[in-house]
Image 1: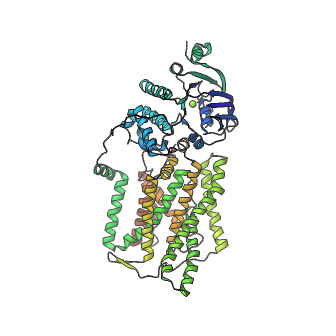
Image 2: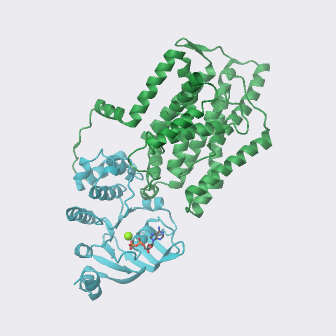
Image 3: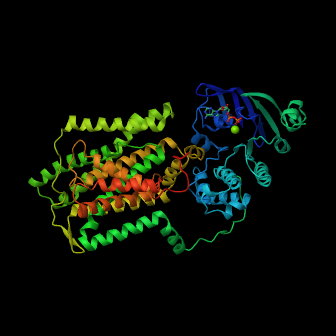
Length: 234
Length: 355
Ligand SMILES: Nc1ncnc2c1ncn2[C@@H]1O[C@H](COP(=O)(O)OP(=O)(O)O)[C@@H](O)[C@H]1O
Ligand SMILES: [Mg+2]
């Protein structure tokens, strides 16, 4: 479904990603782990078209999207839940969700999507007329995921959803992602919480200093010496 | 589709009664300001006559349109436009060169219908040409800059708009000369009597046009998809891109609307402000006064602020004397900035500016 070949990305003169290649198949739940500053967010932003890539190719459903802009990529069915969330803080929860469905035509479909999001996160339904800027951290994260779902994506890119959240909220978010994956949404998850991540994903990649250093199934990664030592602390 | 056959979530929150929300708004600084403004306006009207109100509506409405344009450009593109007055100038110029030939034609060939619509044609042309100059400005200046680098964006744009202002003022002088290009009036009709005062049709038209435009603008921003996209881009550009909004097009649109509104203000005030190279300075100052007083990022505040500034200037002229109408507002602005640095309507929720 998604194929990244030899991706290189720079911020001005800082070369961050070095020949990153990865493949994600339809329906899979794949993770990308790695230390802070390795370039994980940069990988997601490159795929989502939020930053220009220097070289390399990105194919989505066989179509090259490397030079497309963020809005075009969203229309193709890729949605990013960024680390910063990028919510519309001056809009209510409902307004944020309907902005999420900006590319969706048809009122019925929008309503169905919104009901689905409210079912997934009943907390958002309670807060539907509250401004996004006044929500708690966990609620914002739910809203960010909810807003992404409103575009009915086939590939969901999620950047560190557990960052700064209370353990109970982290559970809620992880459960929601699993529900989505069961419903057929392909998920590419970036996470620092490696223990938890390796319990839920199918496969994973490890990114260190801008390079993919390891890849494998959940079981392979969980048994890997390097991962056990550095990321799982055993 | 990811969903299907899921149950409806019931209304979880009952809306607060409108009246409660209204009273809470009244107690905010925005509410107090507007209330005080209304009271002062009412007092001045009783003291000096209702013409005060009409004057507030005429000029205030136009400053409101200009300030709304400034807010829009700042919110959506992060540009503080110091060339905004020059789009007002373009409006006066276009209206003059459209209206004068029509007027001359009418002198030799009287035609009632054309007499009535000629001013409307002039103002509409100003609106359209203003919008087109917005397109040109964006594609020639800001679009290339956006593509190249966002670094030091605010400062670069500040300098660029100053440059645009200088260029447009001098272009006007070079091509059209420095003489006043004005008209006596748009409609050769007797003034109408409203609440005991006589108002020229020109003034009536300008105030109605301003109010109708503000209303349309507000509905557009609040209820249409494109209006919501404009608000979304102003709140989070990356977020807007992420939900599929073509940010480039929305920014171009903001520029078009902003310039078209300024030019329309110029066109409809041609009978008060004849066209000359620096005619845009006063509107520029006034609309920036509005922004400083009400704070950025608030379209409704900008609309209300336009009327407040007009009231302030008219009161100063009446009670303090001609020539003081810039001094008093500036003093007041200084006071407001000391007490409320974010402006009277400054919102608690942070926009793109504070990040
Ligand atoms: N907008 C930016 N401008 C310049 N450098 C950046 C920017 N964003 C990230 N970087 C740098 O790129 C590197 C990778 O960042 P990032 O992708 O956010 O890593 P991660 O998500 O793995 O923590 C870091 O060294 C970071 O300092
Ligand atoms: Mg990151």
